[in-house]
Length: 82
Image (cartoon, rainbow, N blue to C red; front, top):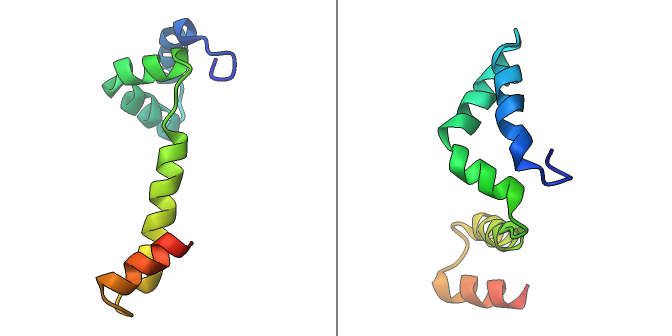
């Protein structure tokens, strides 16, 4: 469903998962149902913000490494250098 980009199968899959005995899977399905339009769009549309999220994650990791070591000017230089 995800790899073939078939959002029309989402509703049937959610119904099947909701009927299972696996509590964690049912909880995951409830979370997907809570944001159904976004999940459906993510399965059907070719765009992704994964690249942006990767850059944000990298910057946050670098910021955590520098916490308490220097002021903003050194942090800025270090982020621009890496």
